[in-house]
Image 1 (cartoon, helix red, strand yellow):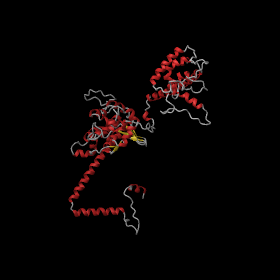
Image 2 (image 1 turned 135 degrees about the horizontal axis):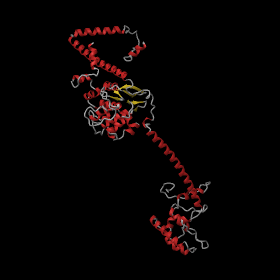
Image 3 (image 1 turned 180 degrees about the horizontal axis):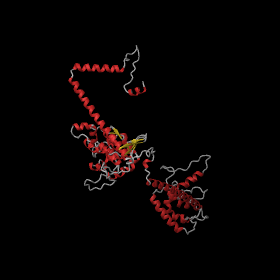
Image 4 (image 1 turned 60 degrees about the vertical axis):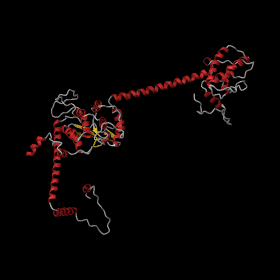
Length: 292
Length: 222
């Protein structure tokens, strides 16, 4: 589990803030190491064996620590049956514990150390029974109850997720069925307005259709002919003008312009100091329609 | 398969149409709309000439873009796909006269309804034909355009056409006529075609003989 604060800085113990309960500390420490053995709630952090010889200046080496941890476990299985409270045993094992305890001297967020060291680090006294390390699988404390709760919750979540998956599956199947039935996805946003009104089936009335087609074809032919004739006429006009002399051309132009003026009407002269109002070159037909 | 090479205007190295990337026949706005539409993304990925046929026979209307947002029609998306594929002439002719009765010795079987009546060479899929006509108008040379599209002027089947605000009815010959004469059709600016008169003057084309030619002559002589 990644550390809570995602920094490489070593975790410092929580500051004392007056008025705030210390419970945060304990919860923080327990969250850090998921595999950490849950200690009895009011129990403080295991005391560091600072007074232990040869412990303070060991080099940190994860591999060596792991090896030591493995070795430690073996040693513990052997020594489990020994319920001695003697220190000699501990000091004998001290050498093998060296690595682990040096690790534990560091900030207590290391998971591996907590397991082994927590049980070893008790302030030993001759009168007390030596605390026995019980392997994780064989412990039967309140943890199991809590874990069963967690298991129950996990099962519930799994069930809920399964239900959600079922719903999604149904919806997907519905969509696939609709698609298979011919409804096209790209048409989803279309409001097919009067698509059905317009009927494009053929041969409903062959005669009428043929007649309509004939009409269109005749119109097309007529249009082509008109275009040809217009082109011809223009060419003829150009030829004719070329054959006139310059004076005759000017005479014709003047006549044409005067005719235009007459059609336009003699209202061109503006009053004194009137603003120049141009009717505009476009929309002439619209103006005429509206009678302006 | 995907249109990345087509849409990359600088790095295009495929077939050119009139010296240009075929995609540039559509305007940038229209191209963007097409490429962002669901139809393009779902249905037009990895099409080849054969599978495009399958898509085209499911068309039910022609049109450019519609709606306020300029949503492209499947017709337009398939046309863009054709521009990407740039199929060969024979393939397009197959699209056009789909279902032509096998009078000629074609070993290819023509599926779709074959009409026994000799009035026109019509297949069952008129929208495929319209799509092919649209492509021809965009991609081929003027002489070929006139020669290929004019027989379609005798096909008077109905087409549904989607405009900005709804649907209208049009006819195949009307559609082809618009392709030949109008400037802008189905959300694209059709490139300027020399008029038939010009081509006749240049003697690349014969003057058009309409299917009603005989009747007109009778009218004229009256």
